[in-house]
Each structure stands twice: as C-alpha cells, then as structure tokens.
Length: 484
Image (cartoon, rainbow, N blue to C red; front, side, top):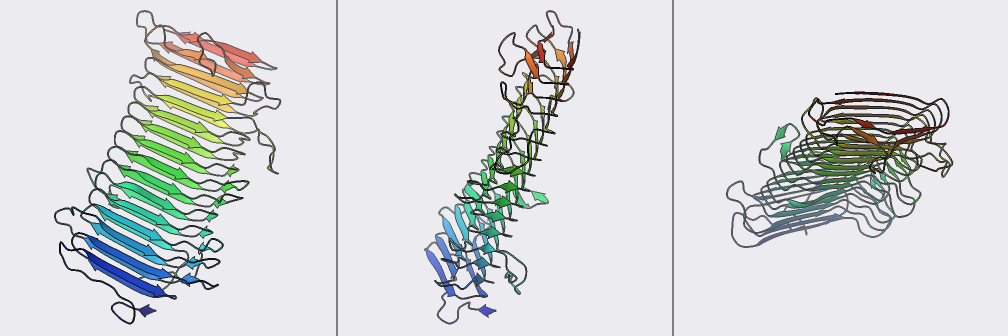
C-alpha cells in the first residue's frame, strides 16, 4: 500500500490550533492509497480526493481519515471535511474506507464512495483499513460531537455490500443522511444520534434528524437485502428510512429499525414497490409520537411492528395492492392514540402469485388501563371489489375512556376480535364502519367470517356500549357481549 503523507506530489496540510483558516488538500489517483489529515481549531477545511480517472479501472482499496476540532470550548465557526473515493463512467468504487471525526460543533462532513453511473459501488476483496486491505464493499464512518453539525454519506450507483455509519452527539444537528441507492443490494446504513457507540448513550441529545435511503433507480431499480437502523435519544426526533424498489423493480428482504426515546418523535418507513419479505420495526417512547409504515404494491410476507408509549401517538401501517401473508401489529399506551392498518385485496400483478391470503392485523391501545382518546381502524380488502382479501385476521384491544373501533373485512375466511374495556361515558366503546360515520356498521363481507365483540363500560353514570355490525355472505358467526 502506498503511504503518501507529506511525500511526493501529494500535499497534506497539518494545522495546529489557530484562529486563522487552514486548508488541507490531498489528491491521489490510483489504488490502495492512504491519506490522513489532522486539524485543530476553527475555520478548518479538509479535502481528500482518491478518485479514479476516466477509463475502465476500478477505484479500490483506499483509506482516508480526517480529524478536526477540539474537545474544549465549542468551535464558533464551521469546520469542513470532504472525502471522495469515486469511480467515473463505468468505473467501480470498491473496498474503500473513509473516516471523519469532528469535535467541538458547527461541523460539516461528507463522504462520497460512488461508482460511475454505470459502475458498481462496493463488492471487492480489497477494502482498506489503517493496517491493510481486506473485506468487501466500501465503509464510510462519521463521528461528530458538539452542536450544529451536518453529515452525509453517499454510496450510490450499483450499491452493494457497503456500510455507512454516522454518530452525532449534541443539539441542532441537521441534514444527516446516508444514501445507498440506484440498485441497492445488501447494504447497511446506521445512524446514532445521542451515542458515542451503540452501548453508550449520551444524555441531552436534542433536535435530532435522520434519513437513510436504500433505493432502486428510476427505471427498474432493485432494493434488496439491506438493513437500516436509526437510534435517537431526546427530544425532537425525526427519522425517515426508504428501501424502495422503483419503476418495476422490487423491494425484497429489507430490514428497517427505528428506535426513538424522547418527546416529539416522528418516524416514517417505506419499503414499497413489489414489497416482499420486508421487516419494519418502529419503537417510540415519549409524547407527540407519529409513525407511518408503507409496504405497498404487491406486498407479500411483510411484517410491520409499531410500538408507541406516551401521549399523542398516531400510527398507520399500509400493506396494500396485492397484500398477502402480511402482518402488522400496533401497540400504543397513553392518551390521544389512533392506529390504522390497511391490507387491501390481492391481485396477480407482474407475474407475482395471487396475493389474497394470510394477512393479520393487530392493534393494542393503552395496555392495562390508563386513559386515552383511542381510535383503532382495521381495513382488510376493498368494499365493492370483485375479488376478496381472504384468510384475514384482525384484533383490536382498547382500554381507557373514549374507545372507538372501526372494522372492514371484504373477503372470505376473516376472523375479527374486538375488546373494549373501561368506557366511561355515553360516547365511548363504539364499534362502527371504517368510515367512522355516526351510527354506521362495521362490515364483514364474504363467507365464513367470525366476529367476537366484548365491551365493558366502567360503570360511571351514563357510560354505555354500542356495537353495530353488518355481515353479508355465508356461514357468518357473530358474538356480542356487553356489560357495565
């Protein structure tokens, strides 16, 4: 491996602590290069270029590291680090490693390990480390400690077996992103906000944002075998994960994990576009939670789990347009909760098997009492459709005061259980149609449907139960039990 620190035509700037602006620039063409830049103080700029020129050669096995800032008083102006380990044209970017460490705050960091538009990013036997080259794929890592930081890792164009990791500690960190897109296969993207490493959370993290993209391209792009993880601590969180098959492409066997702790959490997970064998798991604690999970368009064998604890939560799971063997579970505790799951009718599209079977949707709210303005909505199938959404299961469990359950099952073999406990007013413990219209009827349209309803009012003056049900088709069975 060539080590070109302060040698040859390569220039690496090393700056000691100073208020003056310092610039470090490295340009390396070739493979298995090493470049390191260390800077202390404010107004630092580091730029390492380890790119492959035009032609068919692969850009592989390079290592670049930049270290900026101080752990003392926070920096008052921006330090900037850029590492580019790209291919061009048909060139690949493979087996490269880049690391950026910034302390003190107001930092900006970017790592680019992109292939050329028609090349491949990742999949190599020559991944660089400080000591030697080994492994597959590119690795990009950013650590930022302090406030007001921005970071981005890009590993795009035929992105395969790459890993991107970002750690941020401090408040007002913005524009955090990992992109592993344009035919994305077997990549790992991880964002930690409020951590120095996975086992060591740091108190006081706030105003966090996170975004990970592991998508196909604009044509028939594939997103397959990817894993995205976002962990955030305190307070104004937002997290977005995209694992999309685009055009006629597929989203297959992807995993997305979002774990948020704090008050104003928001999480969005998309695993759409011929969505098959995907897993989405969102856990939120604190007030003001909101979650949306999409697994749509020929959604087959997908699992979605959303857990919210505290107070103004909203959760929606969509597994639609050919949903089969899909499972969704929403668990909520606290006040003001709403939960939706939708699993629409199956169709045979683009060569995929008929997808009308095996869906399951479950909603649990409050979980052992505590009050709540709860509303739970499960729709399986589309009213008026010529084909059903068969073999479905639905379960809604509500505790607390203003419980309302909405149900629609269109198709055969459905089974639904509705349990409502603790209604404390005349407007609580209601079962109605998916529309939520007053005095409307929950619907089971199709054969062999079974519905069990158990409603228990709290016994408070005026408290009561209301269950409206419509079943059309053969061999239906309904049981309604009400008490106060």
